Structure formats: structure tokens, C-alpha cells
Length: 441
Image (cartoon, rainbow, N blue to C red; front, side, top):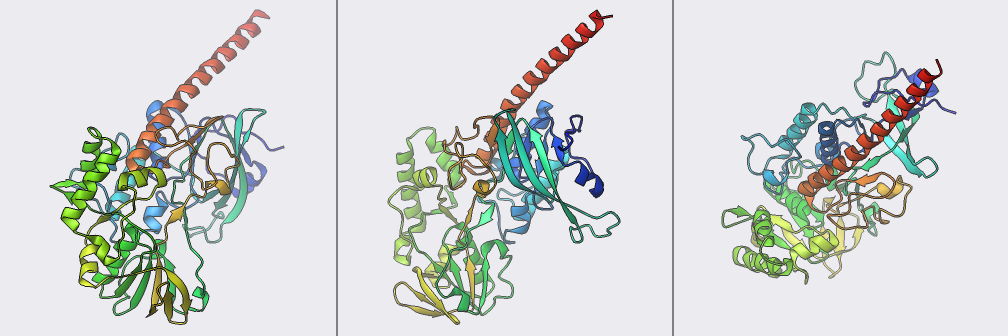
């Protein structure tokens, strides 16, 4: 039986590795938050304001690892900064309307520092299971610990140990994009050229003069194709299905801001009609370039299927000029080339898979009621943040950072209410025991 550290401080402690092997079961007086991305940080900050202790577990060695390690350099926020700020901490006034990736990372680091949030890094959750007998969560992890005396700041030479946390509340904040999606294509193994997922793509530098096949036509696929074009590469973008392309701005306002304003007055289907009319007026007929629009409107499609419309920032101009070539789906690869479903054969040098991401929650959360098999809450926004037995989710709204912030506020408020009530009851129990002890003397 492992020792339970009932008096452990709310934040994680630094242990000698030998001590950890002896003492692997830890009580957390508050929620365990899985994930130190924007969603996890937002919950932590809101809990701090409520005076509730917590522990954040993060498998990477930094906060916001998706933004820091798995995004391309030219990335900017797709929405204006006022729709992307986390609770109780606005963006700096000198930041542009659409902050860059590096500015957003700087903002998140300032956010963590401002609220004194210190995640437990290099700790991967293996499983989380609810113990119905005791009404507690058991969260098992693998922690990498630097050996005593190691000069390196990384995890080279680190030892691994198993740790089990016991807690009353569990907050899942790993998000919808925790793992890359890599489809299987016939013959890809014999292609012979360079193949990477968009999460590993940083810049088009080094691709000059190359023929690059970009698989996927979402925001990532469009922006990677544009970046390659700007670095004198020759991208061909695979468009397998229909896609909504909208202007990023209309009439001096962001399209998103305009949609928010319209939603206050009109039903969703009518707002979709207005947006499509505006897109046609500003962008023209994009279908003649191989970008077929879905039959369902952009907002409805985002709400029902989670498919985000593309906000054009210059790729469409390159498509019109022929500098970005739009091609249909892939049939199979051959050495140095690809055959498309329409029979075309293209000579290519490299492949970038802009094929998206998925949630990894089903791989570690041993619970079947709250989350679906694809790792998203069963209940749609705005009711998908609270499950049973002290289980919560943040960052699965399909509403971006603004939806995650709203969830974080709700989750923190709910946990704080329960935490304070439970601690009040504990104090009453202790006081009653104290009075009984005194009466014996």
C-alpha cells in the first residue's frame, strides 16, 4: 500500500527520485488539471481567484506545447485578439489585432506568471479512473525526473517513475487537437521524398524550387501552401471535399465579429446566408478554382460537425494566379510522384500532411458516459463542461479560445463552490471531534 500524502501542498513538490519510488501515491487537495495549454491555464487562473488549490499535469516540458512546438512560424491568431484573451487578463494594448504565434506564446507565459501557475511538466497521464466506492479519481502518470547531479536542463538521462494522484475533481483540458491525424495512403512508403505532418512544418525556407504536395485545404493547408508559395516553392493543394472560404474581414470588421453581431439579431441559417453573400461579393466564385462549397452553411457546419471555415489571408489570390494549384484526392503514391483520383500524375519532391488533429482522451480516460469515442463531450456547447463524479472538460467547445474561457469560468466556479462546501463540512467535523475530546477531561 502506498502512502497518501494528506498534507501535501496544493502545488507539486520537488522530490528526490529515490523518495518518489517509495512514495508514489499523492493526495491532491483540489482538482487535477490535465493539460497546460490555454484551456488548462484558464481553469487554473480562475481557481486561483477563487482560492482553490490545484495541480496541473503536462506531458511536455513547457506550457502551450501545441503552440510552441507544433505550429508553423507564420501563424497568427485567426480571430481578433479580443475574442482570444483568457479570463481576467487582456492582451497588451500594443499587440496587433491578429497577434502572431510568438506574441500569443508570450501572452500565455505572462498569463502563467501573473497567476503564479506552475504546472508539473514531463508527466504523462496513463489513465484516469473514477473510484465509485470512495467517490475519488485515481490518476496514474509516468513522470520523468532529472537525475540528481545532471547538468542538462532537459530530460536526457532522466529516470521515469509511476505516480498515482488521488483527487476529488478531474479537469480534462487536453483539447481537441492533442494528436496529429496521419491518414494511410497506398504507396506512400515507396514515395522516397520528404514527408511530414503540418505540425512539424515551420517555414517554406529550404523548399525553394521544389514541387510540394499539400494534403488538406483547411486553414493550415491554405496557409502552408501560401507560405511555400512565398518561398518560391510550387505547391499543389489536395482538396478532397467541399470547403467554406470566407474573407477574414468585411466592411472594416472581422468576419467573426460580424457574425457575432448578426447572431444577436438573426437566426443561424439567416446569418449563414448573409455570410455566403458577402463571401461571393468579396471573393467571387471560388468553385471555378476547385473549391466547392458545402451544402450546409459555414456556421451550421462548424456547430454540427466542428469543421472550421477557412478565413482567407492571401492564399486565394495565389490560387487564382495559378501559383497554388488545386488538385483532387489521392489515389496512390509512386517513387517521386503521385496519382490523383482523376488520373493525373504529378511529379513531386515533398509532401506536407495538413490533415488535422484529434483528441487523445479515449486513450487514457477510463469513462464512457461523458466523452464520445472520438474524445469530445457528448453534450453540445454550452453544456459540455460538466460530467458526473467531479469530471469536467475545458477546450472541447468547437468555439475556439472564447469558448474555452467560458468553460473555464464555469468549471472553476462549480469546483470552488463544492470545494468550499466540503472544507466547511470538514471543519465542522474536526470541531465536533475537538469538543468531544475536551468533554472527556
